[in-house]
Length: 321
Image 1 (cartoon, one colour):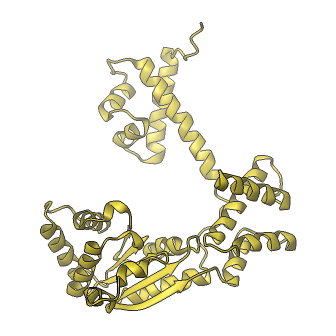
Image 2: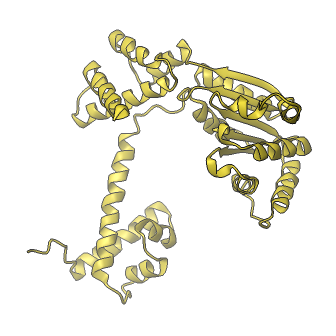
Image 3: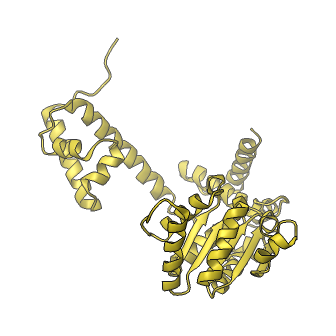
């Protein structure tokens, strides 16, 4: 049995150390950050680079070399994704962002829609362009008030003052009162529990911060409940509600233009994907184009209907598996 492991000579080790130094300088990263990427301790990596590591230099060199290969592969993948269109201000996205802007004035709004219409992308773009916008994503683990408050503190870049719900809530309320037109956006808001929703309402009432609940068609059920007086306090706070059931024609046209699809047969085929019932179809159309473009680039060919149909079939099989 042969040992396929590389035996690092003195010169190879020195070359690896030099490569680490170059990477650190070119990427302006600390040894702590780089060590975390490699999966070792900062002190271990620093000693290795200085030629003073007393441990197994061969084993550590293997880890460093393996990481460089991984990093290079990831860089190539990133460069190959540069052809992906950036955020597109579709009609649906613009409508969503108009509601976020309205909510930022101190109102509560609800945005509901099927998956894949660009709601989440519109949130990311809006936060990037506006100050004091705090985004959380609903999940089962946010069912308790403490978990929600801790997540909100993190979104607001605040330190944790204590572990009691009262201490967490008080700090959030104080800071929201100090900041200019703050807005809390909760994506996937259908996952929020009754007590968390009441905490949000209370924070809104006291601080006058804006709140946007974004999610699927179940969001309004969570907020409105059974329409009894117990839910009336919260439901009456909602200033605007908007439902997006399917992509509008202009959304599809804009996305196809962003992907540089000009062939009429390709447009018809992709539009049929985007208009499929059940939600998520516009996102699926983009995934088909992404995979088709990837396939074509891999073969150094021009993306055409053949690649598009092959990508659509692959994704369909994957969804059915």
